[in-house]
Length: 398
Image (cartoon, rainbow, N blue to C red; front, side, top):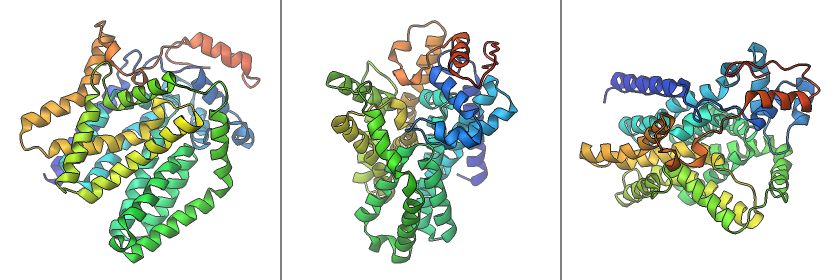
């Protein structure tokens, strides 16, 4: 496929993604601002001198700083949702580049298409909490890590450290990606990587840990915060949480998680046929290690885990699935398997059109409609920084 043709298709995919995220669908892109989101806005509006010290102990400050400056432009719904929307769209070309770096243009385009029509990603691209920022930064981090291995350039080391630092201070547990990268370096062996590349990786990782050393205590605070009595999950509740998370990746609940089956089959196929096995193994470790760590926290520390905590791993899941689908020669098989990743969006749109299909959509794909007046009233009652509240539904928050 020529470069111009692939870029033209990528442009169409981005155009599709923008349309789906701006299209007003209740429970998907509308009614997206809840009580927690209102607290985020309220904290972001505080002076910079007190902002960092007023944040919850488990919250990275980056998204609050970004929102703080954005609020100078206004406080209507479009503006406060601009950041997650921008980072959600920007993740698509990043995934495209990652796909080319690891596989080929067709695989990259298919993975981008899956991300553009993903209800899960559409949902969080229109959510104040800005989980798409974490996904964007993790994709950047992994790209620069692989560029160090492939091109051995100092500038890639600098961008890698910067991406790791920003990702960590956006969502502290993205450090699990760094742990996965360290394990991959050990697993793959320095000899195969090259001694010069290995030195650059080690130095970059050392510099990153030096930069975040003063913030490492916050990771411990997260465990304390997340294991408070109100957050403890036991027995059946923990098992239910695991299955709900699997449903989020699989795309359809009350059925077999078809997306999960395609992912596992793709992983087995790529490793067994030794087609891009090094790249596949790396992506699998990046995807698998954080899940193992999260699962251990769930079992041993009884931490509170939500499906959306795993959103930053979702592009890697889609990339391996796309690579496995593209391995087949018959276009009919590719279309059938690809349809599985479009089906959740079709079911949700049918549900919005009064068809009873919403029961088959994972819980984390849909937002719960919130009353703007009650949210605005809550802000006014709990904050001394707001003198009055003005509410115009769908446009003005406070």
